[in-house]
Image 1 (spheres, rainbow, N blue to C red):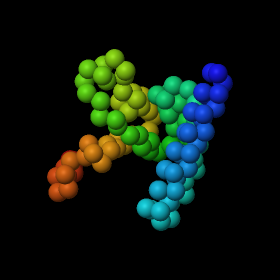
Image 2: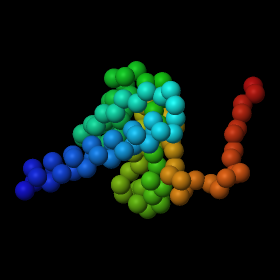
Image 3: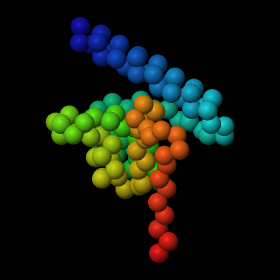
Image 4: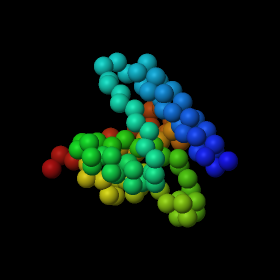
Length: 110
């Protein structure tokens, strides 16, 4: 029973990954996407894979959990941002993003 559940989750994950790759390739020309499904604790898997690749940038999503839920579950994106050896870009879903026209682009001119 447990093996069947794991296999179903793995199949669902592969399908979701394929859909994400197709969406990126439709949206952005000239970008090579190398999909890889990793298993394990997300925080550790992302950090380990970025280190293995020698990544210059890791892009992670944000679920937008509130303070209470984030306190108990932890934040994958925050842990990655605080522990990665490369730069990290945290991307919010479109439902969380600020309305169009409300963009802040700080610059340090020192």
